[in-house]
Image 1 (cartoon, rainbow, N blue to C red):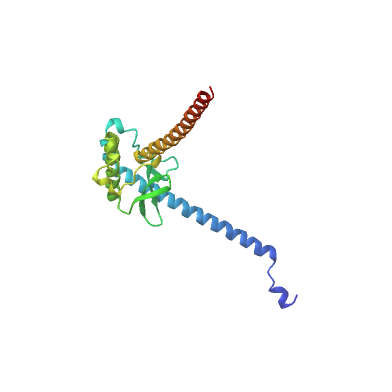
Image 2 (cartoon, rainbow, N blue to C red):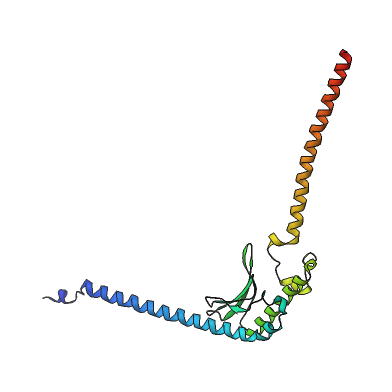
Length: 200
């Protein structure tokens, strides 16, 4: 066997090393992902602990509206039917989000657990007051709601007003059409009566 043949690496050997490398990379990524999920759950637990007093202060009639509990997949804290908090291990930040018809809107992002807990407490207070005083939605809500998005437009009082105006406009069109035909019928009847009298 010459020198060139000795330097040739069998294809099977290279393929075996590649498959082992793929397995190592997969195992490493799985470990990193598990570590991130564990880190996220720990931070969410810390935020829940910070919110314990807030949860105990929610009035009984509103207790079911604000569960303040970790989701089934343990990836977020459910604040109410629209708002939730998640944690990004890469940035070390909490994100307070709210669902809207156009998607998810960020209400606040912070690395400080106490600041996030305060913001959630303010949000819950705003929602409680809005539920107690529905008329406040027409006037813009409480002062602190300046940075809090409103609910889905489908449920908004302004959308209801717009729908009512459209309905009235539709009735006006059909009413005008009815009056037009009624006027034409009256005119035809008058002409027929005149012709009949003139002929008689």
